Image (tube, rainbow, N blue to C red; front, side, top):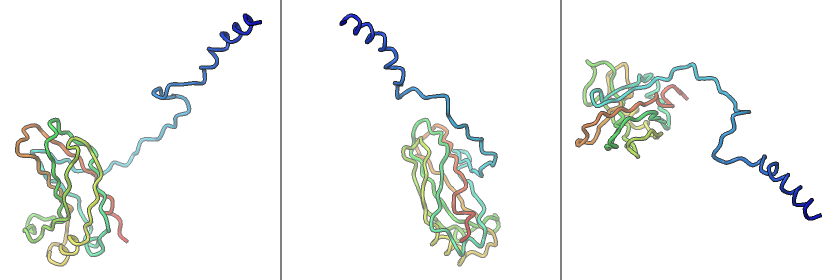
Length: 170
């Protein structure tokens, strides 16, 4: 009887582990495939050679600014992990209209870790209102300016998507 019990127990062991799977192995069946997004996102790419980039702002948005701009840094190439600061301004679009008074600081953020993407929130209300009150320009842009640590000799590239909130008019 003991021999029969042992034989049955040994015979069922392979089936007992059949339902167990390692947590590190991903299943391939039953995975939903999502269609690739067909709409290309507006982006600016800041580099050592071209440290500025901008998105146009509807002039009406300046008088009714969003509470928050969500800025997504989607790609960072920074092999030496040098400090990267991004300054965000509202500025006149046309070169002839650009003066220091036509450039209002919205805010700044730093990449941390310096070689990784991230999301950042800025409150643009005060800068948008001040710009709309003081600027004579009929057009405006959200200007991004990248500053990299002075000791950096390696190329740095930062890709920023058009911020959420620039198209939303309340």
